[in-house]
Each structure stands twice: as structure tokens, then as C-alpha cells.
Image (cartoon, rainbow, N blue to C red; front, side, top):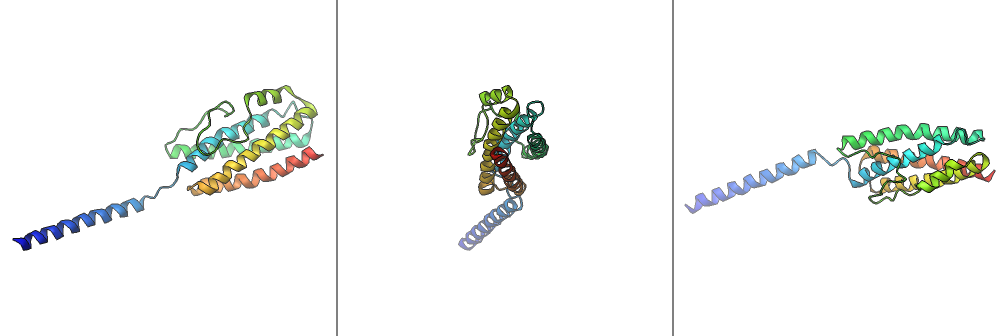
Length: 188
């Protein structure tokens, strides 16, 4: 009788071990593809990019500098597809896609959406034209791009999703090049 109890105990332990191993194996077959940093990056970069597009759309009719007009066109053309990618990614994760441009939105997560312009900044920019507009726009866009680079670096450091990290690296490269260009334009 004691021998039967030992067999049952061994069988029970073996069965529990098999269930535990199976559970671990199943969990490792479905690895986490993203983390909170990825969600924060996408959620906060969308309104950040939307504000850059909004700022770029102010340039025609206010700027008399063809180089500023061309740069604004390039910024809008580059950032809208990135907004679309970020939105698609959030939807695929079951996360809400933010609406609005962000300058009046509450901020969350590790990133503070640095470089975002306030409503007052945006109103000031709308009130300017000519050389005054160009200089203020370039100064604001430099701050804005610097903020995006900071956000993207946080994603590279803390993110898990390979596509989000790749996009963050792309943002760092392209916006750093635009930053250098804008600084040179201001120096002229």
C-alpha cells in the first residue's frame, strides 16, 4: 500500500512537472513583441509629428525663402508616412491612436514630448511673415526636431519592437541631418 502511494505521488509530481514545462514552452512560443516604451514612443510621436506637419503647412504664404519652403515640404512629406506607420502599429497592439496635434494634449509616459510648441508659440508663429517668420520657424523647428531625437533615443534604449526601434533610428538620422541644415540656414 505504501508502495502504491509512492507511485501515485511520483506520477502526480511527473504530471505536474509536465504541465509546468508545457506551460513554459507555450509561453516562449508567443514572445512579447512590444513593451510600454514602444507604446509610449508611438503614442507620443504621432502628435509630435502632427505638430511638425502643422508647422510645415504654415510656411507657404508666410515665408519668402525658397530654402525654407523646400525644407517644410520635405518635413511634411517625411513625417506623414511615419504617422501612418505609428498609427498602424498602435492599432495592431490594440492601443488607441491619439488625435490632435499634441500642443494642447496631456503628456504621459517616460517621454515628455520635448520640443512641443505651446498654443501661444503656434499663435505667435501664425502672426509672423517674411524673414521674422523664417527665423522663428527655424528656431522652433530646431527645438521640435531636438525633442523628436530625444524621444527616438529613448525608444532605441528602452523599446522592444524591432520595427519601432528601426523607425526611431531612422528618425534620429533624418532629423539630425535636417537639424544641421536648419542651423546652417539660421547662420546665413
